[in-house]
Length: 67
Image (cartoon, rainbow, N blue to C red; front, side, top):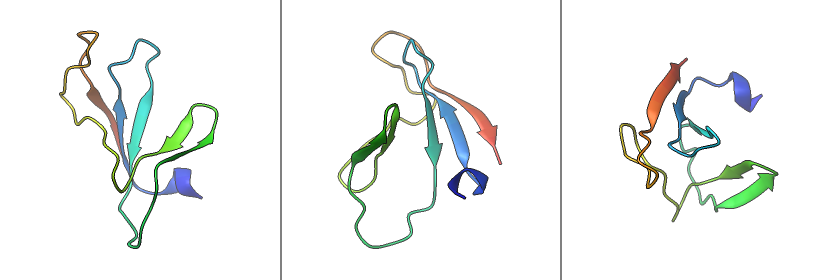
């Protein structure tokens, strides 16, 4: 499944400690949408912040896992 794919994982700067996982784009067009509560996809025409970006709260995003 998707969670077993090699990926980078980043802890966001949000107070709730959200995480971002990065996957290789498979081609075609991938939209941005919620999959379920607290899980969404950001791909074409979306954006995320790369570490060590600073969140508006002052917290810094950081790399947490490389697998």
